Each structure stands twice: as structure tokens, then as C-alpha cells.
Image (cartoon, rainbow, N blue to C red; front, top):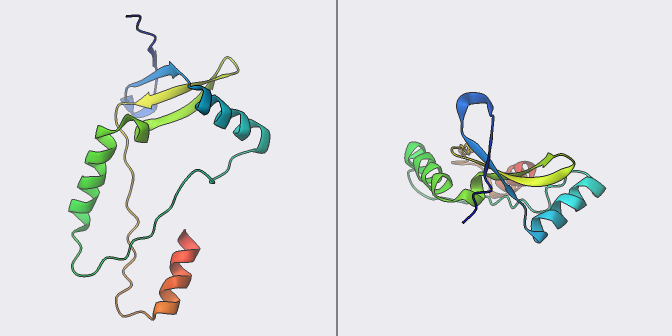
Length: 116
């Protein structure tokens, strides 16, 4: 089996590798080049939780999921005018926590819409 991984230098000494893109990824990259950056493929999902929230444990759970799934640590970058996948060995997704205890439902809806 040929190893097509090419190490890529990265700030913060996080290892990263480059791989060829799939046809679907190439199509997305092309559309991004044609139309410019868009958040259309990023899904923001506000979640209403009731009761006590352990923010530290929630962050640990998200960190564990990101560590497990390469797709959550993959981005498309350009090399020699062509897209390649860049997969980093570590990444962090910071949780945005808004405490809306005691706030009117209409105000909550407006605030969630503002950050979504």
C-alpha cells in the first residue's frame, strides 16, 4: 500500500497530513473558489438544555468526539493550485454557552437567531 501522506508544518506543533481530495470535496472546493466562502454546509444547532449543565464535562465530550473523528479535524487547503485535505492530529471546538435562565422565550429566540 502506498503512503500518500505528506507531512505539513503547522503552528502550535500540531501534526498535520495532506491527502488527495475526493470528487465531492473537489466539487465543494471549486464552488468555494467560484462563489467565495459560505457557511451553507456548516450546520449550527442551538440546543436547549434543562437543569444543571457541567460545561467542563460537555467540553470534554466534544473534545473526545473531535479527537475520534478525522472528518471533524479535516479542512481543504490549496497546494500548487489544487485542493488537498489537511487533517490535523488535534483540534479544539470551543462550546458557546449562553445562560438564559429566567429570560422570556421571545428574547431567547431572538438571541439564538443572532448567534445561529
